[in-house]
Image 1 (cartoon, one colour):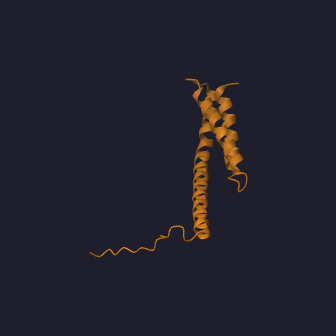
Image 2 (image 1 turned 90 degrees about the vertical axis):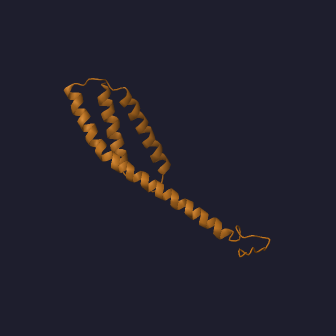
Image 3 (image 1 turned 60 degrees about the horizontal axis):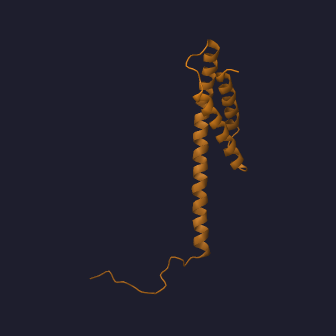
Length: 116
């Protein structure tokens, strides 16, 4: 099977996977599959030949067209994951602060006057 055809199949799988959207549950398995597809694709891209037949050029145009859709979707999903992680971090900090509100208060009761 030609390398370009393999790349086209991997890109179709990646396109289908990303187009399905980021799930609310089971995100870890989604991200693992995404990384697997991206790794397969990179290995295939590295093994592409220097010259192409007309049929391979046609497949290449399809790959580029799908990639134009994949890139913005991946960027949006990355931003959503980053936002969710920062939200979770803030919630964790607030919960810790709520559970122990006097954690950062000085215990010796000393007061330093800043006036000279």
